[in-house]
Length: 147
Image (cartoon, rainbow, N blue to C red; front, side, top):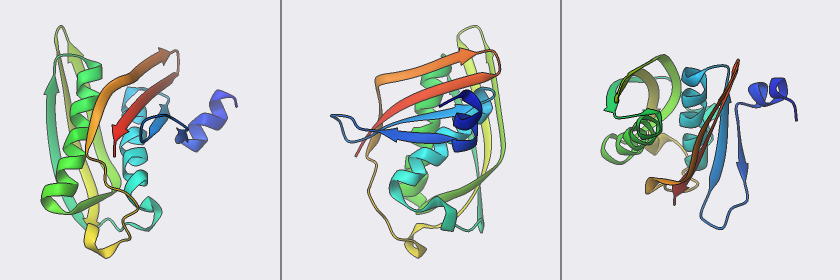
């Protein structure tokens, strides 16, 4: 599959000895992180059905891009666990990195998870096999969540 097809696909799942493995794609880090959030949510429910009725803001600071990805996805799991919030859309996502400090700010839209069928519960994100691969105009992130 070429990069244009992968960008249109946004994310895909792969067989893995652990519970799940996905790769998310984007033209830049912001789009790849957004698509990783959608892939994570797609493990749990049909994201195409989730309405954008509620808004949540996130601010995450980490030491590098990998920890930022980890922390961002963990925050999405927290929103599901603590606030019963399923992701529908990402209205805004900003990422900035300087020496030993990355910051992500996001505005998420979603709905009450009790309104939707839950396929699986993601317990945590792992660093196992986590990758961020940057090429000119194309970024791949790989994540293995613990179900």
